[in-house]
Image 1 (cartoon, helix red, strand yellow):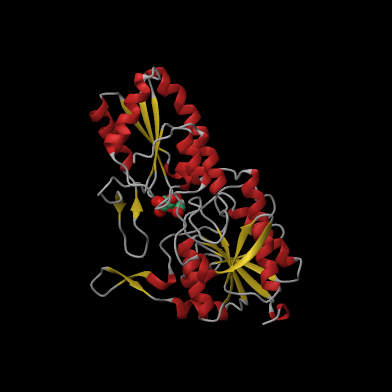
Image 2: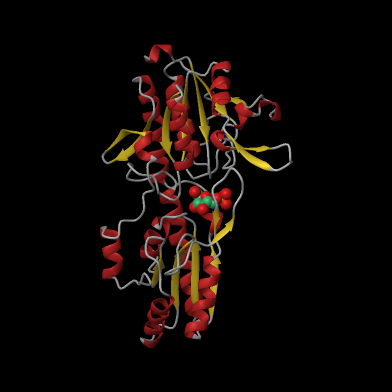
Amino acid sequence: MSSKTIRRIAINTGGGDAPGLNAVIRAATTAALNRGWECVGIRDGYNGLLMPEQYPDGGLLPLTRVSVRGITHLGGTILGTTNKGNPLKYPTKGKDGKLYEKDRSDELIRMFRKAKIDALISIGGDGSLTISNALAQKGLRVVGVPKTIDNDLERTVITFGFDTAVSFATMCLDRLHSTAEAHQRVIVVEMMGRYAGWIALNSGISGTADVILIPEIPYDMKKVAAKIQERYSQGRRFAIVVVAEGAIPKGGTHFVKSTEVGRAERLGGIGDRITQDIQEATGRESRCVVLGHLLRGGTPTTFDRLISLRFGAAAIRALADGKSGVMVALDPPTVRYVPLAMATRRMKCVPLDCDTMLTARDLGISFGD
Ligand code: F6P
C-alpha cells in the first residue's frame, strides 16, 4: 500500500506510562499533519475503540497542532493508557459473573475500518507491541514505537523512558546515602523493571551501591550479608543495597504481588524480605525504600525527549514509505526499522558478560552470587 492511500491515522499508548510518551505523540502528530494526514488519538489503549460509549468524545481524540502544543516535556500520556485492555485477552464477564479473557481483535479491526483509520502508530512495550504484531498480521497497517522504563525490548539499543527512570533512581540513591551514613544503616532500595535488571544495574552502579540484586543472577543471602559485614569491618558503617523487583533468591521464585485476569502479574515485595533477612543475618539496622511508580513519573530527560521525538517522526516516515509490522529502533547513530515479530520474540535481559556488568564487578559491587 502506498502512502497516497493514507488519509487518517490513529495513535495509541498502551501498558504502563513512561516519560516521553507525549513527545512521541507530538512528533508523530506534527509529522503526519505536515503530510496532510488527519490524526486521532485512541483513548486508554484500545478502549476508545472497543468501548466508545464510555467516552463523551466517542473514544477518539482529534490530534491537531493545538492539542499537541506544549506537551513535549510532560510525563504521562494525553491519550490515557491501560494495562488491562489487551484486545487478544480482553477481560470479559461470563454468565457466571466471573471474568474471562476474550479475543476481541477481529472486532477491533472492524472498529478501525468503521472509524476510517488507515494506519496505527502504536506506542508500547512488549505486551502492546505483541498486540500490534497480531493486528498487523490481521491486515492493519501498524508501526510500533518502543516504550518502557524497563528497557527489556529486543532489537533496540534503548527504549524511551528508561533514561529518565535511571536518572531519578540514581538521584534517590544519592539522597539515601546521606541518611544511611547518618544512622549507620543498611538501606535496601527496591526498583521496578519486571523480569530484567536494567534499571537496578545502571542506577546501582551510578549511585555507587554496594550490592545490586537483579533477576538475571539468583542471589544467595549469605553472600549479601558477607559483603555488608566486610564493608562495616572496613569502617564504612552503612550500606546501600539495590534490588530489582524481579530479583530471585537462589532456588526461589519471583515475588508476585497479585495476578488478575487480562493483565501481566504484578511483582513487588522482595525489598521488605531482603531488608528483614539482612537485619537478621548481620544484626545491622536496616530499612527498605520502594521507588515504585515514582520511576515512571515526571519530565523526560533530554535524552528521552530527543529519542521520543526521533521515534515519533521516524514512525511516520515508515508509514509514508509503505512499511507495516515494524518497530522503530535506536541503532546509533541512526533509527532503524525492525520486524515487530523480532522485537517481541523474547525479553531483553542484562547479558552477564556485558561491559556494564564487568564494570560493576571491577568496582567490587556484589551481585549476591
Ligand atoms: O513495565 C513498566 C512497569 O512499571 C514495570 O516495571 C512494573 O513491574 C509494572 O509496570 C507495574 O505495573 P502497574 O503500574 O500495573 O503496577
